[in-house]
Amino acid sequence: MTRINLLPVALFLLILVAKSRSCELDQMRSGCRINSGQCNCGYGCKSEYRYETVEECRLALRGVRHDICHRKPCLHGGSCLQITQDPGYKCLCEGTGFYGIRCDKSCPGPNNLRFRGPFPYECVVI
Image (cartoon, rainbow, N blue to C red; front, side, top):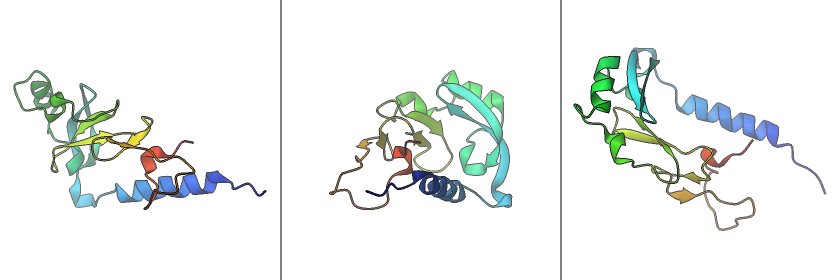
């Protein structure tokens, strides 16, 4: 029986995910977003930072501004991250055993012959 080295496959998947999440220089900016009930500020793609300042983000946490993550749209322990693109949030499902827009689909097992399509990167266990 031959053993497949999964390290190159995992590395390829990580590079593919990183490239798919990049943005053009004119789409970069400083800003803040709500992540797991806290304001996180940094520099990155415009679509990732809903608030221009930490004060705007804090107002959203206090309920003065709309916080879509307050409704807890992510299932099975996924973390909600506010973004500017519709639907206004992104669920981070890594490590939950689920994937999908709301972490609502169970990760396929290694021997699941009925699963079709690319293997979800959220389900890769390294």
